[in-house]
Length: 153
Image (cartoon, rainbow, N blue to C red; front, side, top):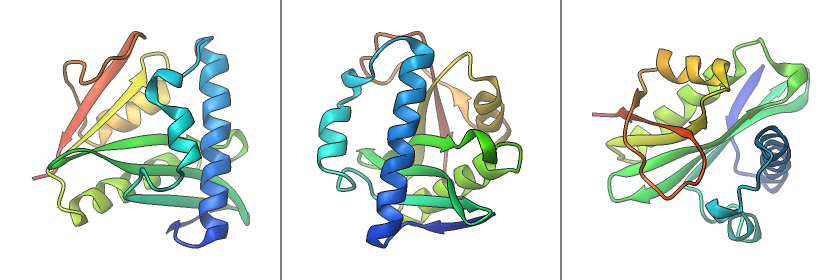
């Protein structure tokens, strides 16, 4: 597995494709669109809504991605963590999360937020292991999502 910050046009195109795969998966899993999150604008302006993106490859192919998205002064979100089904079980999700946490600190953020579905038990376990804790809902989300935060100080 290789992991790098996505900066080249090819890297960014791979991240965008992985994020769109994530959206298709999660919308099918939930049976609901994520358009309430502003996904149309997000992908029309991609990657401008992100401070940083990371891309993981496995056996030479794009295998996972995550984004760091500003939320409010001092706070960012870990967004769109996705590992392709064939690349799961190799620590890629953990590595992407650690890269995003490290990147958030480097950008000067003091807090990192995320929301996830409660049924995604493996992802929830990764977040808990890395120190994320449950918090109150931080944006208008019609689903029964789990909201979490990590103190970066």
